[in-house]
Amino acid sequence: MGPNGPGDAGASQPPLSGLAVASLVLSSLVCLAPLGLILGVVALVRMPRGGRRGKGLAIAGTAVGGTVVALSVLLLVVGGARLDAWAEEGGSLLGPRNPRTGTLFDLKAGDCFVPAGGLFSTREGEDERMTDPSAEIVPCDGPHPAQVYGTFRLKGDHAISDPAAIATQAFEGCVPLLHDFTPDTWTLPDVEFSFYYPESVSGTGGDRTVRCWLGAEAGLPEASLRQDPDDWDTGQLAYLKAMRPSAEAWSSAPGDRVDTDLAAATAWAGRMARGEAESAKLLRSVDGLPARAHGQVVALANRLDALSGVHRSASRAPTLAEFDRRWENNGDEDASGEEWEVRLVLGLPVEDEDGGERQG
Image (cartoon, rainbow, N blue to C red; front, top):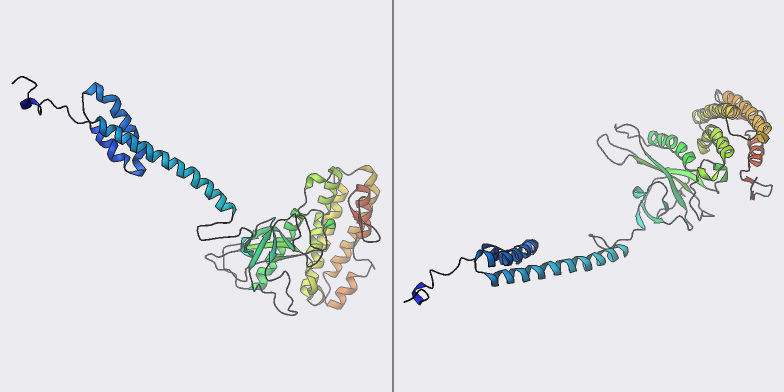
């Protein structure tokens, strides 16, 4: 027989393309389908030049790989869009969630919130322990009973088991944060400031964060209480910075304890004396105040110096009765009159005789 006879058919068959085989195998695996698609295309290009067989396998691998890749892209697009909608609707891997709910431990500076357990304890004479830590975090551009104005961690990494010691540190840490958040406390609505803190912390871990907040049970604020320094001119900002030591000392009042705790009362008087003396010094040396305010600023500085002497004397009182006598021996316990005059000439808001606010 000649060269094309049946006896020579097996010997003349070209080898099978390995790329074609690999293309079909890999295309059937979802994660490797892109590689199978590429190998199928390469096999189809090389086979005419290399004389190998397997064109059908390469075509099948290319088709399967292309289909798998196309379906994968489609699923990603549709699934991604659905994931975005799901997140907006409040979905989570652990089930439905509402981004407006959380706990007091989730609060961050600037958050406005509604605590489930109420703002202030109604149990007179009892510790104000937190019985329900759940809270609703609400937009600040609507009525809200409270807003966090700052957070900080308790000092050190050691264990603290005394709630009173933690509360003292929390109080001292929150006062300066208040004046960072609202430098002009004169313009705050009728709110109280307080804080949430752990009653004890270990030396090896645990939440040591104190959350400082402003709250009101009535006349709820309908906007954030945060103040922007850019809203003041140079003279107003210089005045507020000079008055900060005195304002911080005043804000550090120990509440009702001033009437029952001599140590707390005299410590506060000492802070007042130092803060007033520092503010008087700053007022006399500050740059940026307009000339028209000179007389009122000097009068305020003189008043603060006088009050500093009164409060320094009260800080050394041996009894609460003597503390009261020394504190009020001048018949006027603050410098609000002189402050009112300075604010008026500087154009800062003041209250009129009817209690309404007006611009200076």
